Image (cartoon, rainbow, N blue to C red):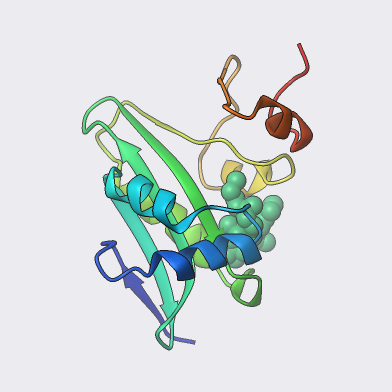
Length: 143
Ligand SMILES: CC(C)(COP(=O)(O)OP(=O)(O)OC[C@H]1O[C@@H](n2cnc3c(N)ncnc32)[C@H](O)[C@@H]1OP(=O)(O)O)[C@@H](O)C(=O)NCCC(=O)NCCS
């Protein structure tokens, strides 16, 4: 398999990207929301196999202090082939120079990120618009 790497969102079909996240699975993401989110992001990494989008990720960054990596997912048919690792490594490389690179993960994926150099934060906190869903997905503590 020869993966083609693309670092710009210009040729991305947002409906196809939304489908990738549904299948990965990384939840239901509206195509128009994805267009806005990726449009406001700084770094991108997409993987194509024979013209088909099979992996994606982005980073929201301010250029000096903080880069936040999110929306990283790989199609199930292409998981376990090193694509996710390469997406994160590329976004980390693009983010070099930032004082911190931050992400959070669904419980169970921590070792994937630990092996890529990430350390657990002691006091990360967040306000989720849908706190109930975040609780259900194990992203938040109850208190
Ligand atoms: C998590 C995900 C992005 C990993 O992508 P991938 O292409 O399957 O991962 P890779 O093939 O690059 O794996 C790299 C290494 O991490 C390991 N790994 C993969 N997924 C892992 C996981 N969930 N937990 C722990 N280790 C994992 C692999 O075994 C591999 O190990 P190796 O280097 O010793 O061979 C992908 O499985 C996915 O899209 N999952 C669903 C969506 C999701 O959870 N996204 C993460 C956002 S929080």
